[in-house]
Amino acid sequence: MTLDLLEVLKIIFLGIVEGITEWLPVSSTGHMLLVDEFISLNMSESFKEMFFVVIQLGAILAVVLVFWNKMFPFQFKDKKKPVIKKDTFSMWFKVAAACIPGTVVTILFDDYIDAHLHTPMVIAAALIFYGIAFIVIENLNKKRKPQISHLSDITYKTALLIGLFQVLSIIPGTSRSGATIIGALLIGVSRTAAAEFTFFLAVPVMFGLSALKMIKFGFHFGGNEIFTLGVGMIVAFVVSLIVIKFLMSYIKKHDFKVFGWYRIVLGILVLLIV
Image (cartoon, rainbow, N blue to C red; front, side, top):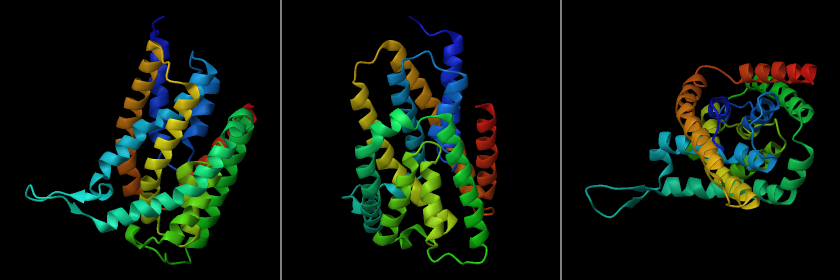
């Protein structure tokens, strides 16, 4: 069976939603699940559960491309042996430490979350709660000067604390980037450093989650499913390139409160519709 034009448009739209919401602290998974409530893909529930996570690989490849010079731990000069960038290696070890809490919780509770909490009510509640949190924290930060202004200043202790906050993102509607940014802001990390660490942290987290979902789904993809995944990831990749550059430019002059208000409004609309 070939996909009709309407299904292709749905895939493209979901890719756009993923590319926009993956890096903004508004919950990409929450948005994807909400969109599916209104323009549901004509696919099995098991495939969609996997698709909503694996499509994020397109967004991850975009952040790797944008931050390649900061993320790649080797530097080549004049065709000689590669020079090891110790600061970059150190950052990846800190990222690994930050991944530990989320990895444990995901392995233990992922099936339960998928079965019981992927509902519009839960998503709406998480959108509103963390929207309020963003506004409150940003108001508090007006009177505080960040203790950690640069990515390189993040310690193992700080990285682990941020990783603990990331555990909150297992609840649909929370936002992985939102949870890590809120945690980072609370412990005195600047907006720019918080966003950059979120980008680093997203790479192993999303590759790991995607692998977990694909193993659960199995690797028996049909032609339509391969096409759906491929188009969704490509669209998410292209849109993410634009959004990442926008976000890094935006937070140099603005705070995150606008995203908090957006979350609250969206959450209320979802509750009204439900």
